[in-house]
Image 1 (spheres, protein in one colour):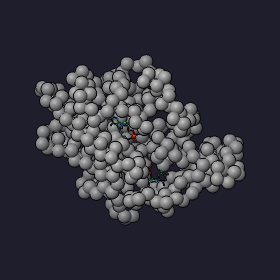
Image 2 (tube, helix red, strand yellow):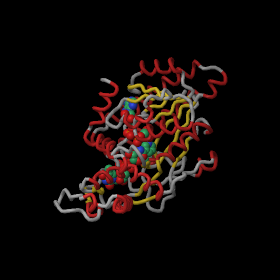
Image 3 (cartoon, helix red, strand yellow):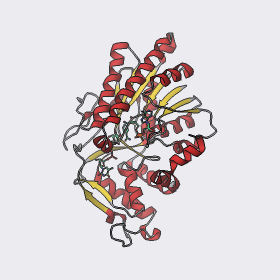
Image 4 (cartoon, helix red, strand yellow):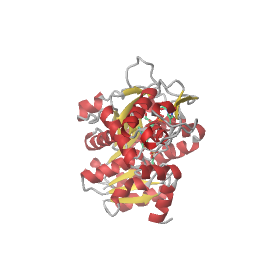
Length: 363
Ligand code: NAD
Ligand code: DAU
């Protein structure tokens, strides 16, 4: 079986759902259920024993030791993290705790387990650390995209904590010979994305007639990847990646934030016209005709990275992976998913997903 951390979050839950759809290998899913963890994401696995959910913290060394000795995973895929840059600016400590200390505890528990393995089992063990392109810092408009050799230059407490965790993972390969893999991925989007992040926030706010807050001049560039493609990239690296190596994963899809927001508005105009839904502009009290009317430029994020771009040629060359979705197909699926899953959205917005968890699973 494999151990997943953070499998109730956005990418982790997509990964668990696809894993269970694609093969029979059991998954133990360890998640602390912070505000970002939502067991409703995994509701379709109710009654499916392939996934065993453990509510717990990756900083808890005793719990980790118990999980490793009880389940003896052949691999760890480590998603659990504090992931939101804005939250890392207002409250960096949780990022150091989970992303740095938590990753360290998980590495220690994995190392102790790996040391008990023999022969082929020991050689086949993998620790895959899911990281971000933000560790590389920011690019000027004409700079080449980040490669695996770009020096680390993190600019936010979030990216600094992820960079620290990447360094720890690397050190376990060089010092102990532990079979680790690291992936550095660009911005994901798709189903179950928590609506504090750009794309789901814009969809949710637009449908509610709320303003669409664009930081600064909106010309910051991100490289967007559909979450299912990220999951397939991780599976490929887990299956065939070379231990000790890092792999950049990206969508070959650089776009300015303001263009993303306009694309989302145009899709909503087409798929859920404001006039038909009688959406009222919460600022003016007037009916909304086109969602782009709600775009509002607000103060910039402190230390805001201007541009990210991923050079994903290594994973393509060495492992034959390329994204399956274009941005046009992925964003259309995403907007459609949010429109079809308004109950999920409502539960997240009003916090009732926590009540559902309490009711469903007890305290
Ligand atoms: P998320 O915030 O949606 O989910 C994080 C999950 O981790 C939640 O379920 C949360 O409950 C859990 N968690 C947090 N602290 C924990 C702890 N101490 N112990 C156990 N579980 C804990 O994050 P995401 O967007 O799904 O990102 C997953 C991983 O991918 C992160 O490591 C992130 O750095 C990385 N990543 C994200 C993106 C992106 O665009 N979202 C891109 C590249 C890399
Ligand atoms: O690049 C990978 C990273 O992508 C991941 O490591 C992070 O976990 C993930 O959160 C994401 O970070 P970003 O900061 O790029 O994502 P976010 O959705 O918060 O913001 C995307 C861009 O949109 C960024 O330039 C800030 C801007 N933005 C964001 C919000 C929430 C706005 O203009 N307005 C907003 O309200």
